[in-house]
Length: 179
Image (cartoon, rainbow, N blue to C red; front, side, top):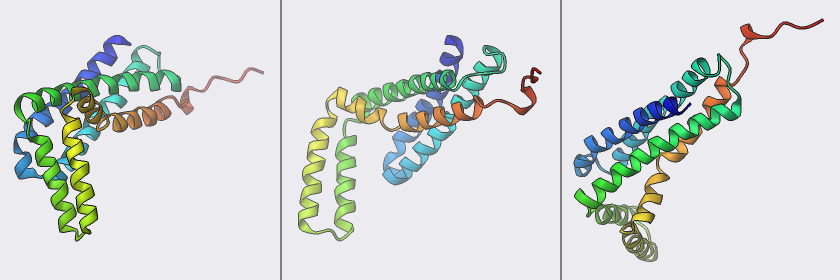
């Protein structure tokens, strides 16, 4: 199991990390909304490795069968490794090459609220919230937590669906009835 989890986890993490390294230098041109679309599309592509990893485990270790719990465990471990790769890449990028990211993100969020025609109270509340975000985001532990909640739910959803699909008994493999 260890080899399968590591292999597919690092493939998924590599896809996430490489795409981040490719797109983040162009964040100003791409924009935050388009960046989110590209990011989550990449996550869906990367987390297909959960399916392939669990299927590999089922076929090569489980002899063609895998329980829901074991499939979920394998998928979750693959997701955790991929998420760790994603977070590590972001931490290196943010703290070494993009320390102004939080400022740009906050300015974009405030500008979006202003353009929406929100009240002065809403704009002031958003400005306060963004100031708190910028301070909190400088803390590496909070930064790691925020960054983890981007890919983790996507990967866990893939693990859950994959476990359901691959743990089902195949019709052709039904055991003969004993009479």
